[in-house]
Image 1: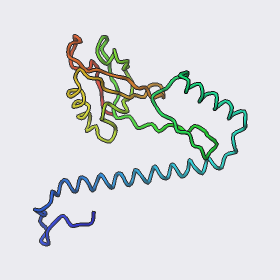
Image 2 (image 1 turned 90 degrees about the vertical axis):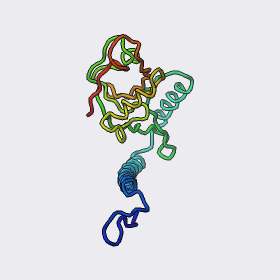
Image 3 (image 1 turned 135 degrees about the horizontal axis):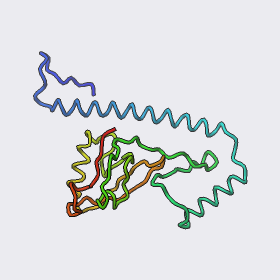
Image 4 (image 1 turned 180 degrees about the vertical axis):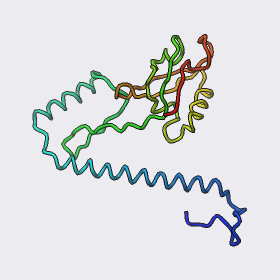
Amino acid sequence: MQTSLTTFDGFPRADIDVAQIRTVRARIVRLKNDWKGVMEKVEVAVLEGFATKEMGEEDEEKDAAVVAGRAGGQGHSNGVGTMRAEGSGGRAVAPVIEPPFARVNSVVEGSPAATAGLRAEDRVVKFGNADWQNHERLGKVAREVQTNEGREVVVKVIREGRVVELKLVPRRDWGGRGLLGCHLVPV
C-alpha cells in the first residue's frame, strides 16, 4: 500500500501494473471505510441491546413459538435472513438490506420478467452476481443476462418495504424484444 508507483524521476514503474495496483488500493480503502461504518453500527446495536430491559417470559415464549413454527415449515420468508443474538436475550436482529441499484420501469406481460414475478417499480438489490457495488451502470446486469440465457438467475428486489427473491430465466423465445421483457433504469 505504501510502495511508490513511480520511478525516482517521476515515470510509472515498468515492473508493475500501475493501473491495477491503483484500482486495488482504491478498493481496499473503500472496504476499510465500509468496515468502519459497519463496526460503528454494530457497536451502537450492541449497546442498545444491553441497555434495554430483559424480555419478559411472555415475550420469550412468543418468540420461541414463532421460531418453532418456522422450523416446522410454517410461516413465510421474505428472502432476508435474520440473526438471533444469544447475548441479548435471543431477540431477532433487523436484517441488513443492501441499497438498490436499479428500478424496474416497466414489465411486458408474458415476458420472462413477468413470469418470474417482477413488477414495475420494484427496486433491484441483487441481479445474479451484480449488486450496488459492482453493477457498472447496469453493464454487469447485461452480462449476467447474456451469460445465463436459458438458466435461472436469482433476483432480489425491494417491494413495498420487503425484500423479495425471484428466479428469472432470460430467454429469446417469449415473443417480444430482449431476453427479459422489462426495462431497468439505474437509481
